Length: 137
Ligand SMILES: [Zn+2]
Image (cartoon, rainbow, N blue to C red; front, top):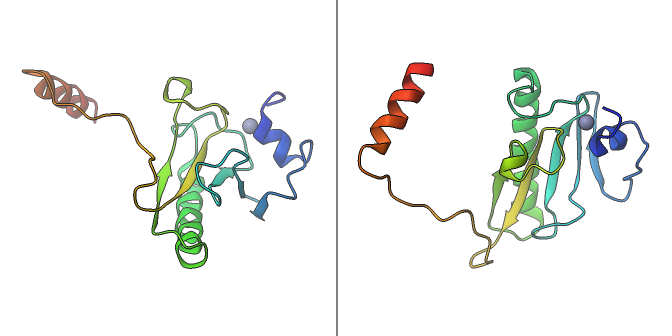
């Protein structure tokens, strides 16, 4: 994809040597340039897939193994107590680079990081959504 910033990183058009952690023939792993906390890491495939549904299962397996490795390093070596694994899937969900990627976001207690506020289902709404999902499953 010619205008994809991650494809440009993969092909060397945008150098990230100062941020790159790891690269093999399948994945590239690098520090987010605007971290939620220092050590915030991005893991993506070298091939272009727009979102999670397009990403082949063998690549997702490699990604989640890398998430586990990076997460352990973040906890064991950077002084963090845990991490969030975040996928912003599609632009409406704040995916700003349309090349599927996983965030590993280091966390400490009371660091102010928040997801959307949760709310209760309205009358009959849970049953309606459950039915639709189960029918399509
Ligand atoms: Zn791309």
